[in-house]
Length: 139
Length: 406
Image 1 (cartoon, rainbow over the protein chains, first blue to last red):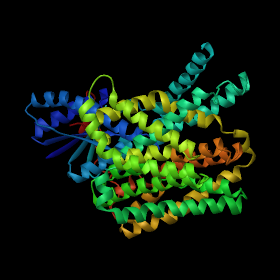
Image 2: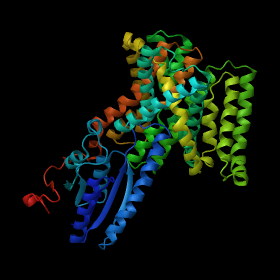
Image 3: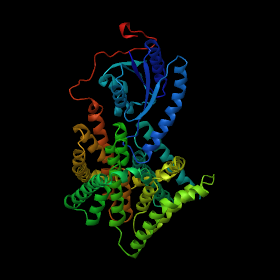
Image 4: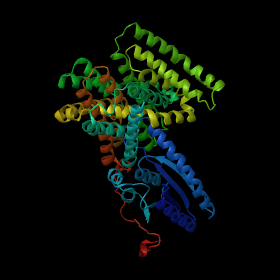
């Protein structure tokens, strides 16, 4: 195992997924990539979309510095990235681009209501269905 | 003043409710506010009387109008002027094609199928000709095309499309008097001077707690807005153009833009969109749903006729062609601004306004839902490759599951 992609959305579940990914990265000496996805509102509307994406990015950058510290404590230098779009789509796409061996994500992300899941679908289910590589869903 | 404070509190309660709904449902706040406006007028109007929201009070009109103006300015300021200059030919062709096809198509549908008046039909053409820059921007980001020449050209084309819409709205219904001439000449002079004057003025006097920059921008917007209104034009026309000419300077000042966004979303646009929703007559919509369907279909078909060939020219893959065409067929803000202009200037009736708003909302929501249901994420998977189901490992920390745990 050389390349691990960990999907991160600041939720408790994502935190567990990150710890699990970090364990694997240490164990296999693999590259750890942390991906966060900023999801615009539907349908995207003028000005608000850019505002929301900037806010997401600022929020994730803040979370990343804490994750970086945890990873460095165990001798791992993770790569961090924020992308925009539908989470499942971006996770699958990024994993394909970097030819990841495994995608790790939390079972349930932050503030995903029933309506949200109905509209967008379960992110983990979509990633499980369409990923080119092994997927680990951390509970 | 007690009544004004009470009504203001009611509007902000509705705005807060709309924001919560938009957060829970992950939909655009503008859409949520329009729907809350429709429902609030229906329920509160039936319970407490039709004038409970006081949507025609002058202070409500001012806040709503200021919301449309500042929002349009911010939308114009999002333009990347370098891209417009670099590929202006392709941008102009695609942008104008994306405007002209639905503009003429929807006007023809309103006139020949729905038998609306000439003026009302033109207004339908304008309201349904927009392309949502925000939707295309989001799609380009998702596909990673925002940094490519193609992505930048299409994004700039959307600005051209919306600019054509705003110019059409500002000039088609103007009576072309001396006032119009004065408005056009003064605007052109201001647009020419602003990119030179503004950065120098800000450099010398700005960056102080008194928020000189915000006052300067609002002065320009309200000043030219007043001139546009005096010429019987639409104040969002100069606002969009001021945004575009200042995109390279003010548009890059993130602190100022964020302050203006806070003012806009926190106070002004809720009044605009809730007010726009409160004028919708659900009775008229229920009485003649066919009208909505004709307008909606006209927009979808004519927009596709304009956009799809453009994606062919750029040799976009088949699935992305369909996806981009669907998403470029959306439009919310300029569509509702145009429809409200028509209603408040007596160009269309309340029933026609309701059909137009329904078609605008339909065009914002339905293509996005279709695109998400049928195109995501399959369009990213190379042809011939089946989704991988085997090899999936589901692990639970603390709950080892035999050979599946690691």
